[in-house]
View 1 (cartoon, rainbow, N blue to C red):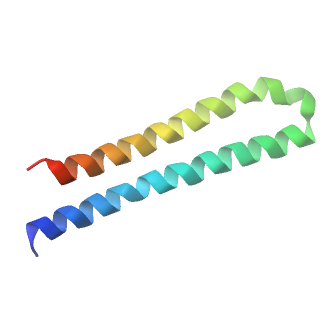
View 2 (view 1 turned 120 degrees about the vertical axis):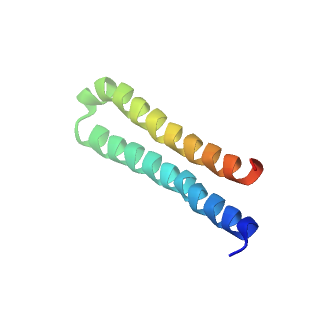
Length: 75
């Protein structure tokens, strides 16, 4: 297999993590809204946890993007 083709395939596979992070953030906030509608009095105390979970999921997405960029531009 051509090394350049392998590099592009690896970068594409690493970029899947960005889509997975977007799905993860959607699940986090979807479940938060569902829980907030069931128990509005507890929503304020759980919003910080939702933001922390979203930040961690986005961090993993950025890490996946970084890996893809490194695979593309580093010899």
